[in-house]
Image 1 (cartoon, rainbow, N blue to C red):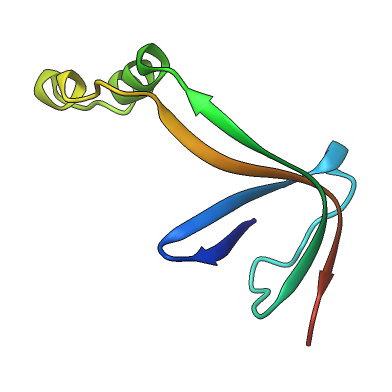
Image 2 (cartoon, rainbow, N blue to C red; image 1 turned 60 degrees about the vertical axis):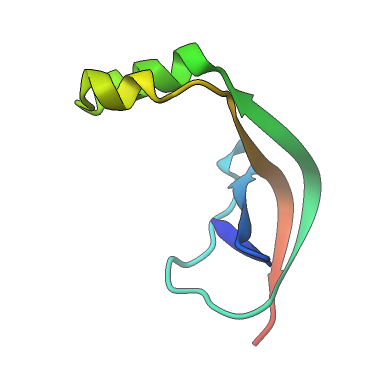
Length: 81
């Protein structure tokens, strides 16, 4: 699940132990409980993913910095109606 944080930022929410799911068409406000963290993907890993995706050598060469992703592992989610 992705949550919009505003200012063109979002957080990727995963569910602890896949213990529950949220409907794909869920909209509106959500309250999440769990652990927030920043995940960093290395340049080597990003290049590997780009190669796997069939990107050109020129596109892969442009990858020069690691990517930081806001992540969250939720042990509970409350969806407001």
